[in-house]
Image (cartoon, rainbow, N blue to C red; front, side, top):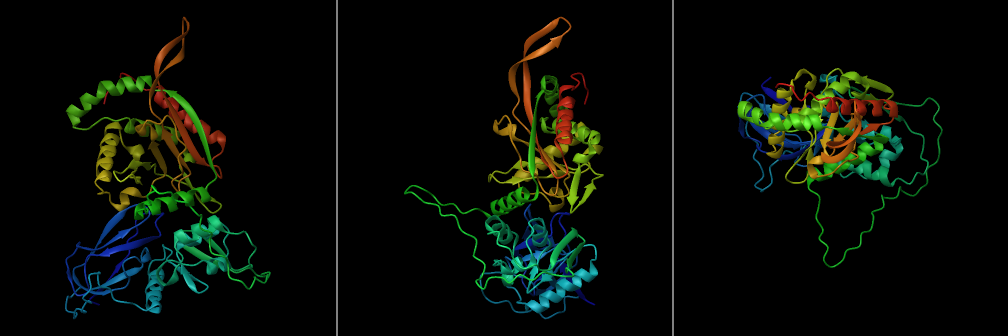
Length: 455
């Protein structure tokens, strides 16, 4: 066969679908190997999708704006380059080939057979539901009957993540018919289980009410600003996290005087010798990694009633973008890096995040997240967990404060550098004892920093 099927790439274990932003190639265009064919967006990052093979773009299976499951076929490339190019319509918009819904279904079903390790969208009732939508439905106990009543804003009336989250936030709580139960146990297996003796409850004849829209009054000087695409995705992700995890936050105050003295002494040395700026973030990450090794059950995820204990320690570092949005690059295998390696990784990710140059793989796979609210002058914060993780730590601003010190000659009051640490954790699996002990251990590593340490 001379045809090559271009599929939606997998961009991290928690990413089940992506939105097509723009096709950079038209039907009939020649494509070189590794040349960008389209731009996509997930709830984490925008990215370009190159073609692994060269040839002629023979067919486009999805339009701009469509939400497509990972591993689904999105385009056909004639590798021999001999196919007759399909004339594109003379419109400003990127031309696409309209594909009947049955043909698109066939492509997705074929992908499921070929890639048994991934769950593509499946049919439930009369519509497709992506793994992400089905997972939210399971967590929120939304039956298949309710899913069928939710108005879909996606292509062909598909229910998007935003649709189901809006529905959950405004659901009336009226009992519905007992329908097939959606069970999503792992990303690789989506099963619809039929109850053996379903109890049939007659639903009211009237259709389900649309989610109520909150009325906002406007005055003369008010300005209405529509959220950009990334802000909408962040909003959905935050709402989903609060719906998924019962959040609890613990706080400790740490005396980081030794750490501040060491960093002030070493930052010029590191910048002169390595050309790297020495910030507090890599120091914080090293302390977090040590504490995770002491309390590995913080480094877990939940899969239904199973707890997945992560072997790798991948630390996400929340970074603010110039637009005001947030992105979380992930330092993979942070436990295998020394402090200089962490410093270089932090600086590299921070610089490329601001330039919007991060790759999808660099913002996925995190097992624990650190956010520095002190960078904005805040003394503490209560961050929202970055799903599917179970904990996130915030570091506050370092402030000089009077503190009581115990000496061999008695207690004295001294000026010390103090900082609040806060840990938000998922109370389904992390109790106060584990969460509090872990946070205290991070503070201990910070307070015990060796001022004579070499780097």
